[in-house]
Every structure is written in structure tokens, then in C-alpha cells.
Length: 164
Image 1 (tube, rainbow, N blue to C red):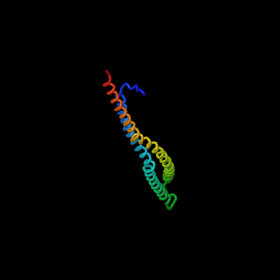
Image 2 (image 1 turned 90 degrees about the vertical axis):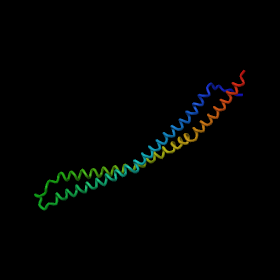
Image 3 (image 1 turned 120 degrees about the vertical axis):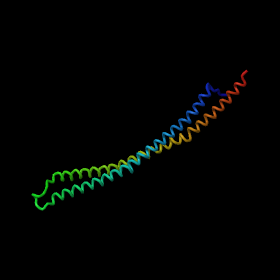
Image 4 (image 1 turned 60 degrees about the vertical axis):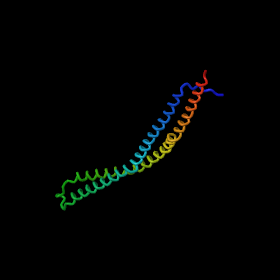
């Protein structure tokens, strides 16, 4: 017959409560992590593409306006009537740089969105495993520990009653 060296059944009962609390805390943390993963994926797949699409439209509008302004300045019939166009040329160049910048950002964003999506997918698997531990395995372990605590209490009570 095996013997046990349990000195404090209440500490085991406290451990059972701790396991259930741990399960609940981890479950909440996992839900927060899932929400963060979702927000990160949404940011790169929706928010940023919308932003850079809008910025690209603004850049295209700016370049068209700058080119129109330059064309107006160069359209005078006589060269001596033409105003200096250096500022208009600089504005066109600046608008072209901005347009290229926005196009580069959109291209970069596509690869970033793919990479972020892959990383988010890679995180979802382990998060699901942890969630299963929190929802199933830890509560089951707590129930088994509770059953053992109950059996130990019955055993301890029987031992006290049998003592002379």
C-alpha cells in the first residue's frame, strides 16, 4: 500500500482555485492577443492600403495642378511676356517625387501585408492551442485535483475518527 505525505489539504484546494484563476486569466490574455493580431492584420491589409491609395490620388491631383500651372506660364505668345517658371518647374518636380514616393509605399505595402498576414496566421495556431489548454485542459486538471482533495478530506476524516 502506498502512503502519502500530504501535510495541508487546504493548500491543494488553494492550488485548485489558482489553476482555475490561471485558466481564466490566460484565456483573457489570449483573447487580447487575438484582437491585437486581428488589428495588426487589418492595419496592413485595409487601413494602410486605403491611406496610400488616398495619398496617391492627392499626389496625382497635385502633379496635374502643377503641370497645368507650368503650362499656363509657358503658354504666353511672346517669350518676353512669360513670367518666370522656375517655381512652377520646382513644384512639378516636387509633385513627381511625391507621386513616386506614394507609388513606392503602395508597392512596399503589398509585400508587408503578405508578410504580416503570414506572421498572423503563424500566431493563430499556437494561440488556439493555448486557448484549448485554458478552456479544456486546465479546468479538467482543476476538477481532478478537486476530486483528489475531496478524497483526501474523506481519508483524513476517517483517520481522525479511527484514532484512539
